[in-house]
Image (cartoon, rainbow, N blue to C red; front, side):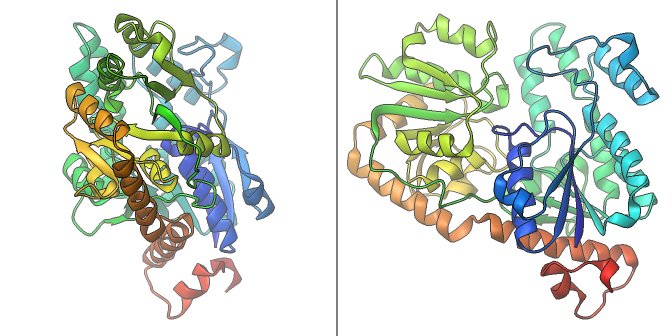
Length: 433
């Protein structure tokens, strides 16, 4: 099967979209499929196994208005070479977020010239109007929605003050487009039953249109270690995103350090003077917090395996890949009972102690309980590893996704051919028959 995998931004080593693209493309190629990734900035890092298996990257450059070095930059006049470029700048200038729309339009232009090269297009959470043009040009489209960004909007507006509430609503105005596009794409994928319910409610998707395929983890890479650093807590999250609840974890660390020696390692890109950076100083815990970023998978796995406890303090999660990666490392979790987290980590203290979201006191109590109880840490860590081995595999994700591609191809063609699904699942191509 020849697959065009679209991702409007694919930050290589953090953020669910980049991780999803990197692992899914590799496993699809290992199944024998031809995979070409189309991405805007930041571009993904394709690992050596993926490249050896034939995965290629086609860059779909934007004006890169939100790069880490110069966010919200104003481009030079000579950089604006098309009406899509102009739309991108004008949307940013009016406090909107243009990338889902503008990437989809650029991708549609690229694919219009290459329709014969692919059997199916897989969109990763873009849901821009350009996808509808891709379908009109003759390619079936499958889209993954990790979770409805309506939750991000609700929390961002709630956290904003004064006029910033207006800009928070404007920033998320692309959601109206995403809802319209989602309702028109026949086959949608998501990563948890919790997300499925929320997406159907947020976007008005009928039952039966969404298929749940949980994310995976490389259990050979994310593995337990016998060397644990006493008092170390690891959290992998976008520190300044209200949705991730990092402020509550920082408050919990401030409570804990009054009773014991603790070290919070925060895997995030911390903005100087941003909400989390400011809160660290307000709580006087700078000497107990270490911030790291840009880790590759091996480095992240080693870090998670070195911790006594991992924490997911989110206010909402559609899945929580960091939770699964920590579980794979045999690291016990403290996590919030929010969104899909209980579905992912299990109930009844199987792999995690679960606490209410937005409750720093409950976080501190649960973290302290685990830090003080080696037997409980060992039991939850072993339970998490067992749960991951039984449920979460990237190879299984790829196989189920390929099956959905074939069903989308059959539906698009208006016919289901006997025997075709099994052939394509093994790496065949519509063009070869």
